[in-house]
Length: 401
Image (cartoon, rainbow, N blue to C red; front, side, top):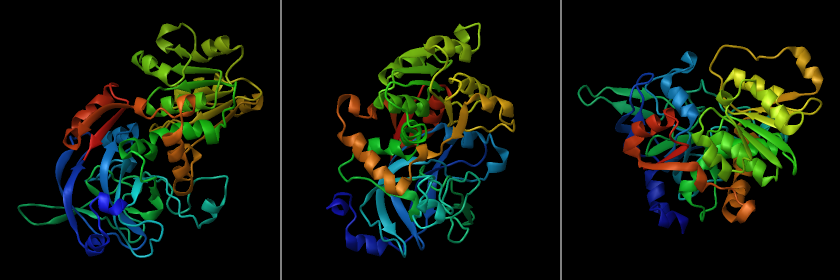
C-alpha cells in the first residue's frame, strides 16, 4: 500500500530501475557562490545502491560550512550538498534486500553495512566502509558519480559530485544502501527529516554518548539545532539543571522550550564562562557538550565540568588547523573528553526505534521535533534559506521539493 500511495507501483519501479532520471537540483559550482537550480541527470542505482525521491530536506551548519568551502581540502565542484532529508525509495540496485520501492526512508551520512567488524562491535557506530567521510565525493562501488550536468550549448556531460554519502539537495539522489534507514510508513516525513542529522546527533549524544542520568547537571555550548537537541535529550532524561551558553540572546527564548533552565551569555560577564558555571552549580556540571565548532568554547566546556568525574562531549565541526587546547596533565584531574558522531546511533539498526519514540511519546516523554523547524520554504528558495541560517535567524529551514 505504501508504494501505491506514493505513486510507485511495483511494475513502474521495475521499469524505472535502469532509466536515467532528469530532475531539478541545487548545484554549487564554487565556494560561496549562490546555488544554481538546474536540471541534472541521475543514473540508476548500481549494485548495493538505492535511488530515492527526496520530498523534504533541511539545512545544517555542516552544509553551510561546505558551501563556504571553509576546509580547502574538502572542496570539490560542481557538487550537490545536503544531508538531512526524508523521502521514498524509487528503485534499488542489485543485492539490496532490506529496502524496496515505496519504502519511507531517511538518508544517513554515517552508514552501517551490518557485516564489518566495526558494525558488529556494540561500542562504535562507525562502519569500516560507509562511515562519514567529508573528503569522499564519489560512490563506493566504482569511484564514479551518479549525477551529471549536460551543457545545453555543447552537449558536454560533466560529472556532479556527491556530499557526505547523501546529496539531498536534489529531487532524486543515489545512495549506498548502507546509508538509507527505513522509518515507519505512518511517520510524518517532514519531521522525520530531522533525524537524518541534527536531532539524532544531539539527542543521541545525551542518551548514548554521555548517558545523562536523572538529577544530573548539564551545560550546552552553542544553541543551534544540535545544541538544543542535546538539551532536549537531557530534559527527556530528567537532568535537574541544563545550562545553555550562547552569544545570541534570541536562542534563549527557544531554549526554554527544550528544557534549558539557566542561560549564560559570555558577553554579559567579566569572568570566564567556566567560572560562571562552577558558581551556578557548586563546582561544575556532570556533563558538558561543545556544539559550536570553536576551540575556545571547547576549552571552556571542558573546564566547566566537575573535577573527578566531569565528561565533555565534542560535537562541533572544527575547520581550523589549531590543535586541542589542553595540556595532558589537565586530564589527571578526572575530567574526560570524547567526541560523538551521529549521537552514537547505529543508523540502519537503531534509527527506527528512535523514530518510533519520537512519534509515540506524550508530554515530557516526547521529543519536541516541531520546535526545531523555524522556517518552511519551497526548494527554489534554497539561497534564502542559507542566508537565514548564516544570519542566525533560522534553526532548521525545511525545504519542500
